Image 1 (cartoon, rainbow, N blue to C red):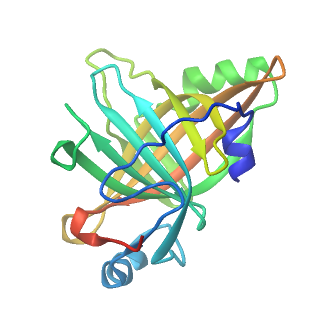
Image 2: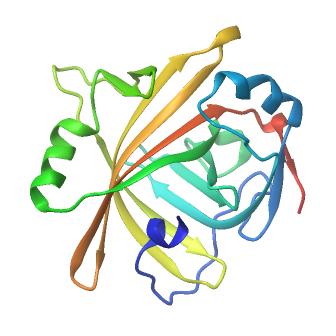
Image 3: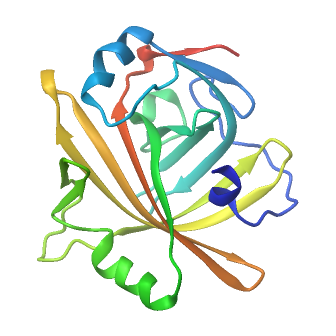
Amino acid sequence: MFSRWFGKKSENKTKTPEIMGLYLGGSFQIEPLKLRMLEPQLMIEKAASTHIIQAVGQVNLDTGGKILRFYTDDDAFLQVILDGGDTENHITDVKLWYFYTTTTIGNEQQWKSLIKDGVSKRLYQLDDNSFTRVWDAVGEESPPVAMTEHTYEEDGDVSETDQFVMLYERQLEDDQVEALLVSAEEKLINGNFDRCLVVSTGFNLTQGDITING
């Protein structure tokens, strides 16, 4: 998954993003009791409690906010969203995501059709579950949100991925939700676009649900 996700690399050496004690090469643990309580309601199966961070992604948002993603050895990523600054006081959302499917996009026509109609829908059906779009625009159409992620790996390599994303949710018990992230992604590799559709499911966490192992 990681080689597919990160694509072409450069040799730039730079300081990698950190927050909450999370850093490239470190590890963390999700509260096991929370996992046991939530997992029966989720599409995720056999989620790990302990995770080793193998790569870190950063997205700078047009609003001035920032998305940090800590990719782990369990085919997952811990996503932290910040607004207005880079400290823990600026964290507005924390989720643990698991990759559900990755589908290659074969040609330009398929890519354009995906961006137009395949990423953003009022309802997104995944197996027997229906997820409702969260990011609705004012007008009749709600196009995918465009962003660029820079991903940092342990050997110092950096890759860049353009993403066209939509967020969905479905209601669970006790006012919990399961989130769905649909992302059309492209990288330029040796002069050619490498494109795929990545579907991930996730759930909300608090900072108290996460223990840093070091």
